[in-house]
Amino acid sequence: LPDIALVPDPAPDGFDNDGATLQASGLLVNQYNNVALDIAARVRQRQGEFVPCMPSEGSACGRAFIAELAPRAFRRPPSPAELDALQAVFDRYLAQDGWDAAVELTVQVILQAPAFLYRIESPGPGGTSSPYDVASRLSYLLWGTMPDAALFEAAAGGRLASSVDVGAQVDRMMADPRAQAGFMNFAAQWLELAR
Image (cartoon, rainbow, N blue to C red; front, side):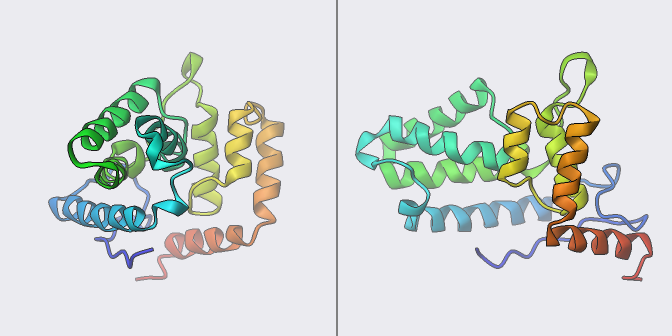
């Protein structure tokens, strides 16, 4: 991964995840763009590691690539409209500039999409949180990072709907060394150790 240096999130009350104070400045948007360009160029250079099919398959392979990358980037399955929009970007650049450009520019679009940059929640029926929202909340609370494969599988399988299900995931996650790092980060912010 490239060395990513972004403007730090504001933390006026000590916590760096206060939604009321998190706003993207012009500088941060520019930094997101630069990082997306850098990562997309690296993916293009090493696409054999990321593209799950043969480029000779054209648009169909682009769809498979998007179908693998977008759910991880968005931390949830993309909607059909999102997939279609990404496919349109891929197909446009495939026809205009060729395979490599289509891969690179589609990665740039995904890395600058609000669904990647922000944790946008999409309420389920009755205003309840979707399983993917629950997975993200748990993961960012306990580990400070995106959900792992087991948490994604639990969300996909509807195994985050009850308190028993969530408790089982919390127990699993707390046994992971990432939980200690997440707790230490919370404690440092809560006790204002940086100040």
